Length: 121
Length: 323
Image 1: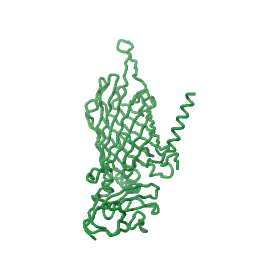
Image 2: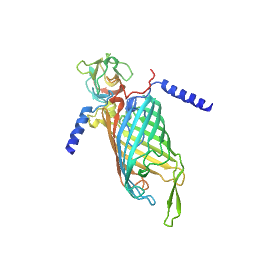
Image 3: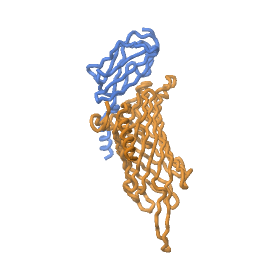
Image 4: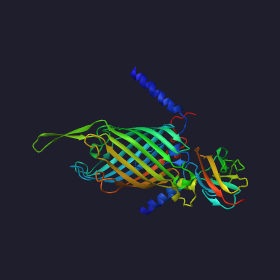
């Protein structure tokens, strides 16, 4: 009986997923709050929900608030939960990634995170 | 004339709420902050949600002639947004008292409750929510022997939620913290209950049980691992762990009058919430703050459904929205 209940609970949890129904950031590359030696050429952000790309943005700014991305961001054709944007050559410093996305279930969410670059390109 | 003026004021208030911009987000979002539904104290946000069931196992201490009693409580709450910032909550409960004041085991429904809540302030930048609520417990709708009172209780309240995401980056590890809280008046419609009994000599005895006005307050302090992972630093937590929100809830009742002044009761409730896609699970220990509240640690658990995510285009929408 206990085993059945455990299996049922596991199926329930897996069936409903382990992410919020609203689109929140699942993970990113460069990683949230990370320090990287080599400047990245792009930022990729994976969300917990599929996105409506026309209403979803991803911007990267430096410490002076200047845009350093070569936007607009694009959704990945194979993965509608992935948003990515190319970057201009980055010098050492801290960069903030700001996102605002519309999930396919019509909820808007927004957020930001930073990463740090330690070396010149 | 007076009733006409009241109806004009009420209509104006409802219209202004309807015309107010849609500042409220679904189930407890303020900017980046997701406030989970707390198990012990009420939430500051207005949303479409269902808590079913919430269970509580607790042992109340003996009080005068009343013996110590094991209490099992199972409750449910359904909240519906009427306007984006105005919601109505309907709540009911079932109690089992072992023993009840009559020295027998009694069970039955508690009184029906209804709460109107208005979320009047939301700051996305400062992850802040403020709301006002008015609750009504309908006396006599539950079973008296199972603890339901025969009188109404009114509950005007102010509620707040504040996330710490606006702290400077130097304090980034503190950003996942958030606090929610409530200050509330618990106002019985009757100051006391008279009960009549025949003593051993056959004489009629009148006993008056006083019902004090109570100042109820509480707060919850939580640390959001989802917030840490998504906005502060990806520390590589496994998927299930990163959905956890450890919290402590403090719940205090200060009776103010009618012979009960100073007889504070309350609990400290450490626990954890797991927030999923369509629902959340919560479990807390219920630790009495003094012997007047109890001597044994109880337990509270909850399954809570996000109706706005399960049915985003039907049941999970406000009844009226202005665009």
